[in-house]
Amino acid sequence: MKIIRFMKNWTLPIAMLMGIVLYFVYVNIPFLEPTKPYVEHAVAIVQPVLIFLMLFLTFCKVNVSELRPCRWHLWLLLIQGGAFLLLALLIWLFPDIPAHVLVEGGMLCLICPTATAAAVVTRKLKGDAAHLTSYTILINLLVAFLVPLVVPSIHPHPGLGFGASFALILGKVFPLLLGPFIAAILLRYLSPGLHKRLGDISGLSFYLWAVALTLAIAVTVKSIVHSEVSWEYQFGLAVVSLVCCALQFWLGRKIGRHYNDAVSAGQALGQKNTVLAIWMGYTFFTPVTAVAAGFYSVWHNVVNSWQLYQQRKKEMTEE
Image (cartoon, rainbow, N blue to C red; front, side, top):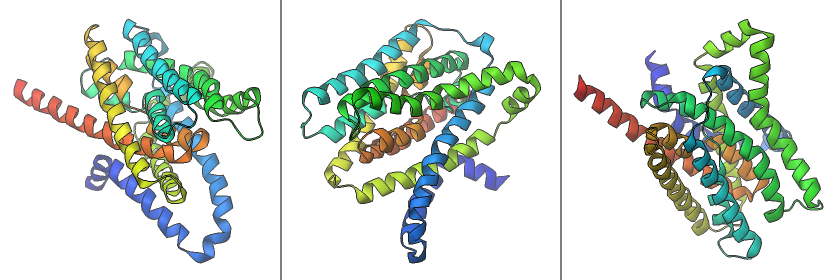
């Protein structure tokens, strides 16, 4: 039990360290050189499958009758979508802007959907998990349409026009973000017993997240090692992700406070599915932008740790 508790408490640093170590160990074993193309292909398949499964298990815990829209949902959708479009417009108007990579990193941090684990943190902070889950579905829907629509304009795929690029990205993003919700709803009606058993599993999505994060960090390290972008820009991506994280938590709580739902809105806007962001970074953007998502994973977990500490202290005082 102590080992399991330790692993859960330190999953983030352990997963990040494992990703870094595994990458450098693997690339420095000469006889594994011929396997690299196969490993890259396997990771490209496994990573989205893990993201799909994490979302699917999360949505299996959702009671559809509890899902309900609220006013702050609209404001947060406008913030994420609007900020993403404004930064995309900046790149489109000034394609040779020196800070191109930093702007892409900001886009990634701003449009990334809410984390699957955000509902757990929201409950611990005494927020409304149903409101947050509703927003998670809405932002996944927005991202599934907005990313394929915008990315081909600022990051055209070689040899493909806008229509073909849009269809290519939509084919990768749409099933990954909306497929799990549709599959969970179908399973609920076709096999209620299996749906309930999957919904009652508490630890599986956590371990899937740990594996997915390890792979994501390994791919991010590869992007850094092989990137032609300077270390100054990579440091800049860390700063950009910190600013985006602080700003989104602050805005979410500020807007949510007007609707007596500061915790839920803060977590909805600030806590991100960084595994998905890392995957989108090296799949659709300049690969090194995945660094921004990797650092965002650190920042939002620091914020969550501080919030949970404050909540525990408050509960102890009330006792």
